[in-house]
Image 1 (tube, rainbow, N blue to C red):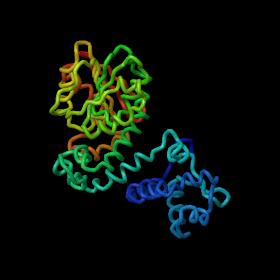
Image 2: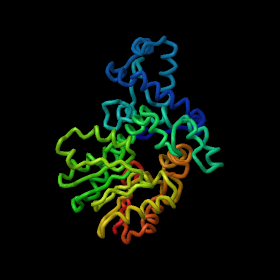
Image 3: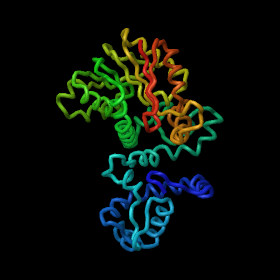
Amino acid sequence: MASGTITVSEADYLRILIHGTTAFELLRTGLEFDLFERLEAAEGMDVEEVAEAIGTEAQPARILLLGLASLRLLEKKDNKYVNSEMVRRKLLRSSPRFLGPLVDIQADIINRSLGDFAESMRQNTNVGLRHIEGPGDTLYERLTAHPELQEVFYRNMGDASKKAFAQILDRYDFSGLHHVIDIGGGDGTNSIELARRYPHLEVTVFDQESVTRIAAQRTEDAELSKRVHFHPGDLFTDALPEGADGIMFFHIFEIWSLERNTELLRKCYEALPPGGVCLVYNFVSNDEGTGSMSGGLVSPYFLTLASGEGMTYAPKDMDKAIRDAGFSRVERYDGLGFSHSLVVGHK
């Protein structure tokens, strides 16, 4: 088995699909019991040692270890269970690629809704939203009534953005811009990093009022707080902040229909001065509509829960919407990793 590659038989692949809920709960439970950290610190444990460490009887510990080993997350060496290399890279909290926040949002918010995927398809709306009480017709509105879930949601979004945004900073030069609006900027992760990288740049996070409160708590640096602003507002009903020559439309395109995205991008176009730019950065599928796997697995969430109308679109969809919104010149950056593309519209 090559590093970074796991080969399974067709039968096992189907078992993972059919028993996917069980596979997820094995992973989630391992994280809940801090099992991977405990195994790493001890350089491996047997069943009895694991049971004592996590505070269970031997039989439940044996079941958990069997399941995690069958999923290739654990290995057996000298009668002791140890972490696989994949766990060391992505499931230890000390790892820069730790996936814990993604597991949390799946467990606490997304998974409960996905049983409504078929009915959401029939009705072409987010039927799964019924599992989260509160105001509004989207997940983002409902989360305002659940601060603890909102914190889980934006912790994952911030974690994912931090990993993906580094690619933007390596590929796109912001030095010619003076003031950038980060639409739907969430907890401010991108805005703070952008302002840190470009000391001349002013950045404004534009998001729901309850979200900007979370974001404002993250700017403890006095110098950054002078250049990173938080402007509460509704993208559909409120005017965008004035004076910006750049707009970041990040992880928004996937939420809405193509028609609604074109309307929103037209609003961005009208808010920009001549020469201004709008950067659309998103999870993407390929142009052929056959992958990637992450794009295929994320899309049902947007239909069933998030908004009832979005999906993981292809870069060509983003390109067309930007042109239809009025932008005269378009740049496209593919192959950015994490199944992302950047499409930039110039006014």
